Image (cartoon, rainbow, N blue to C red; front, side):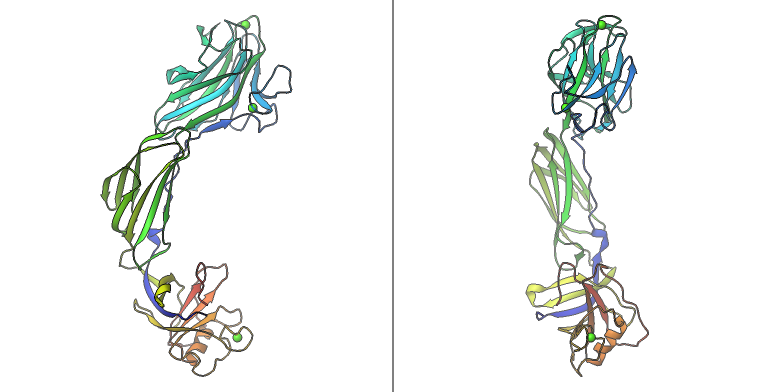
Length: 420
Ligand SMILES: [Ca+2]
Ligand SMILES: [Ca+2]
Ligand SMILES: [Ca+2]
């Protein structure tokens, strides 16, 4: 093994500095092409209701039921006195409140009397025409509808081919909404029906992630939080604000931003204006600080030399041996070799003075107790014991088997960094 000096100590290890998830501001709320279900089933969360008909998923192999995308579309067959709705699942609107809806429709219905319209409900309220909160960028209503209860009003009808509609929505920030495609008709003369396909609701989609340069954080210099705000959505996000509360006890050093400016940088509150984040782009805040030099102190192993390997690592306590302080007990590390069975377990006696003045490193044993391993080490002159393990148990506390020992022992789980 490499030459190491190690100290068995108690140092600050902060569980409070574990990262909390900052969450996702959902932006891509809906993409539905009706191709992932078996006709006539509607996709999960979609519903139909009304009189004289029902929306179903149809295969484009059915005569006069073409799809815009893939194998299927949503369709309602024409009927007299029809008023049948196709309702989307509930969707949330991104932080910016801006969203863009696009979909394809083919309402092959009687001109001037029958047709399709699109409605929207916000936050569980009643449905209203999409034009109340949206502006058609393409594919606006073309013909009139003339049937109760609407009277003469704009609609899509007499469409022989799919038409693409895009609607810019201006809805309340953070609201939920449902869309309703509605096919209505008067009491005579029918067309074929109304098709809807390739529905997409896009917005800015800000995803916030936070990583740390050390975890757990120990008393060995600065560490850095990196907070990334990425826009995975189709629309640009404007006036993005980032708010973060630093963990209790965090000793703030500095903050830097890839764009924008700090509004508040008074720990524990960090509040930044990141400005605009384009679709596919990201902004980054880094926060540098240190762990507090305060209790609680936990069992730790500190590599004190060589300088290229110095570090402090979490360890498991022992229910035997003397108590440790922040200075601890240390020395050069020597790997056990008892020449019997697992030669690194020190379950059998070591040569006299094998570990004189040193820290004995032993492998966790299924044969003898931690307490016995430490007793063996003490008999060979060791000043301390580190029991190492590669098992899936993680860091564990070592129980006593009643043997009196006067040297300390700590348990080390070699996850991420190997001792021997
Ligand atoms: Ca489709
Ligand atoms: Ca009609
Ligand atoms: Ca052995």
